[in-house]
Image (cartoon, rainbow, N blue to C red):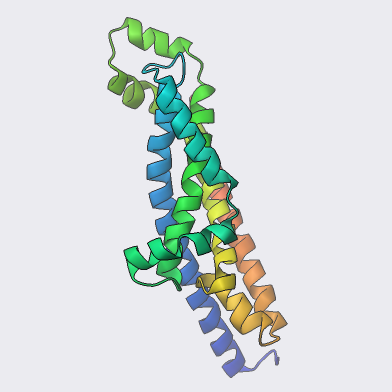
Length: 224
């Protein structure tokens, strides 16, 4: 590597930009889908638990088992296990778009448990006040639970996005696209240590930016 080699820097920057764009694409859509589905599942876990505003012990146990199974499957195994589903949904099992499927599936149970834990921190007192005021379960969810737990939920979603970034890099080891794929194919296999170092730096920066942004939003939403 030559410090002032314009061709080297042009090629390297191009490689890193493509890898970063693919990673942001995967992480962005996987995070969006996982947050939406995980939020709904987490709310269901909370309101259906014994003593909840819509107690359904059987449904709660079934959902809990499903979530626990999803959280117990290692991500690398999950990627391979959902190859048929990825093929069915996006028409391929490799590349950035295909990786969105396992990334989303792996993150949904994680989000659900974080949402449930965040809602549990509110305590039942605030819900009792809403019930005594005649609020319906839907009103309690959208006008009490979500607004009161907004700060905690943002923190939970921030953790989720950071985990998905890590998973996306892992997906690259089997052709999942993004920076992980770039690190394997163009860094490790071609003995380009410089590429590996640059990718590590980019991933660290991404995580730091998302963490700081999440903390900033969570502080703004914190009512305490």
